Image (tube, rainbow, N blue to C red; front, top):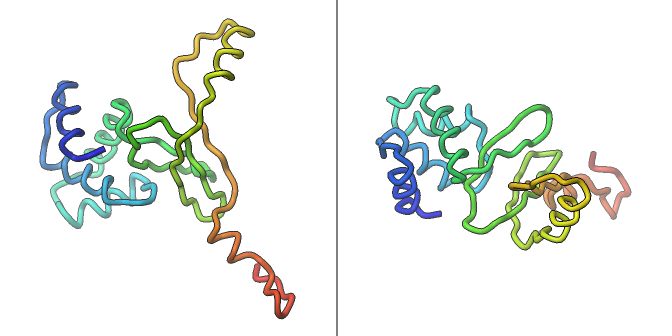
Length: 152
């Protein structure tokens, strides 16, 4: 999503567009990776030292409730946030380094319909997360083909 679209969404939802919120949103949009609230706070405080840690947490909660960022569980009881693409998507989450990659094309509507029919459950939404190892972690962990020595 673009900054102007986010501003408009905030206004339509009854939220003020404050300089602190804009600093937080700019950092989120500029980050290609997921950010923990603590990491986001550190990055934002370099731009605007007036932004408090509580403001970061409240803004993240607000952005998540509006569907503008995704909460991602990266393992070890940690979580972070990543900008949400405009289309429905899922996540590939590296269990080694914590990298999160958004992907699209995850149509599970047939599964949703079957589950709803079988269970009577009214499905409102779903999340699709795959856990494994990213390319960098897989390559970094392979044995050296010349020496046969494991690079673990």
